[in-house]
Picture 1 (cartoon, rainbow, N blue to C red):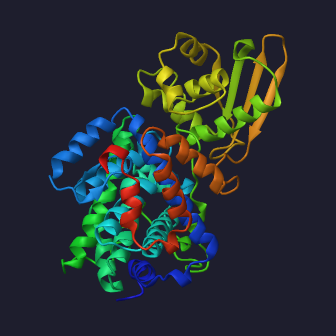
Picture 2 (spheres, rainbow, N blue to C red; picture 1 turned 60 degrees about the vertical axis):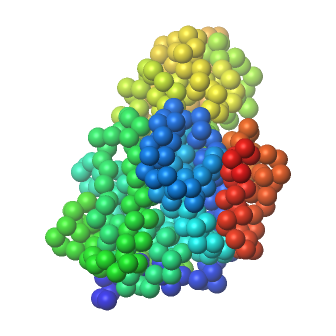
Length: 451
């Protein structure tokens, strides 16, 4: 192979060993896995979960793979359904530079193959690092302004490369075959912002998981594809998707700088853009004694891009639409002083709807970027209460602790996993490098009556 970018990342993913991974990166891979499990358990509250579950059951009739918090399905069905569960209630990760969710695309197929092949926890850990780092490196090389202007959506276009790398690493693909797997993943890269505002943005994610799975398994069979997909002049990923060559960040410091540590987590089941607002609102609640009914006007100052994307989401007709509305999210946080799935079941509450529609204003502030937010509550008595978020909870600058992720998992597991199961899952992931068989983890993750 040449020194093409595809070959470079293929060698990285294929050759990666446990000993190559710094302890901090090993621990963050565990955080990403545990958080994905928490999101999947919470995903049963998603409005479209039953639809995707029925669809996944139709793909095949075998039952060799476990569903997180459920029963068993085929390898294909489990990959897709677990991928959807992780993203179902909008609480999974986001790589902010390209607004790309990667847990649904990478964790789901890696778990399915690790279970099927009776891989060890250490093997799974290495595969997850290979998948996440490959995906974020490809994302880091993207000229996002051009990528976004062309309408591309990251999970379905970037994610499949990470999925293929993770599965390929578990299957022991050599660098040459891994490059083919990346080429086949790229041949399936798809998904645009035309889906924005509908649940089909989540289809990009669980379909991306299957794309990477198929890419790695087909490459393993000797199927031929280009080994230079990322940079090919005619139809390559970078020339086609962003009209430019890959940026230096795609490979800069590879094996010494770990870009996957820039993946942000989400504590609350609402849009990534809302996390900064929610962080600031909870700070406001902690610092001041007030009631929501005493607010005359709530001003949410956000980046211009955030304002443009969410200004017209003041009204909503379902739980998912409510979770994607910053207006409603702010209203329910101030009324309930908590934010979980049940808060979005109250979307028809007249008091919350009136507050969201009449008292909340989303204001663009050019000085704010990404998830940064300022909130100002103008009270009926003339007082003005203020709070600011420069880094939302869950971002690398304001990370969730392992204990906080475990709390998220416990909260999500209620009614699906027993106490003994949950303790085993938490311990197994915390000590993933010592787990002899991923099958024991996946069996523990099945719902009590399904085991």
